[in-house]
Image 1: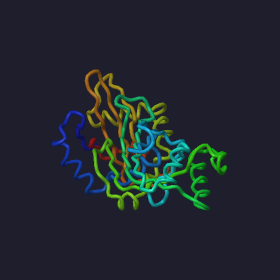
Image 2: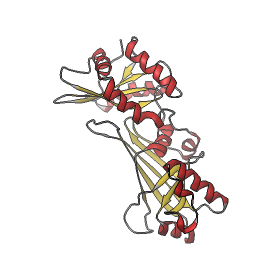
Image 3: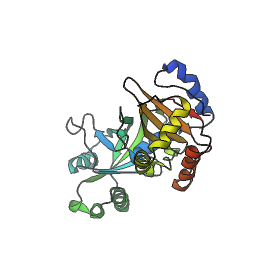
Image 4: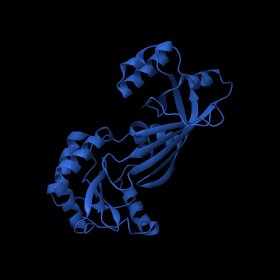
Length: 276
């Protein structure tokens, strides 16, 4: 039987000890890898430039994360010009918002803020940066040069990172963020969660029934998936609670993930918890 902990009804103090035990045994993604995952895959992004151009945040037309954690973005030309001509460092904050890809209550899963300084790639570095953005946006037009490009390419060098998600709010040191990698499941998560919601409702209900977290008439939907486990959201007329099922061991990609999910659905069940 899975281990049962009701997170939605518990106080933060009541769940803190269990969450700490989970972290100590490495059963969930750490804050640095969660931030790297959000930098690469969060659905929404806004750039704020305090004291520079205008007061309104800017939506990057494309973004891509470099191996060192710096973030390439395609922004309006006037921002690129301001960065290029500024005599001082241009500070910026990238605000990332992650939303569950299936319809659930409280659909926003995470916020992440990456604060740092903007620079403009030049020479061959600009061409490489444009190619990275074109690949990330699936838009070959971004490979064009000069005035033909639909915006300016800038790079954000992180100086401070804060992630606030289903696991809680944590500051991440820039060197830890730079050394981390995105979750290997993240690129496929939306498609997999939508498939689970559409085709595996009975299995999801069975898992929640094993824990006692679901009552008759409750709706169960998958809300998050990572290399360590699956989080379900059980919703009834008067309550919403999350239940997390951990895989026997972390997975490293879609093939291993399929086997881990089959084991979860048809085996004795993984360990379950609900640190939110």
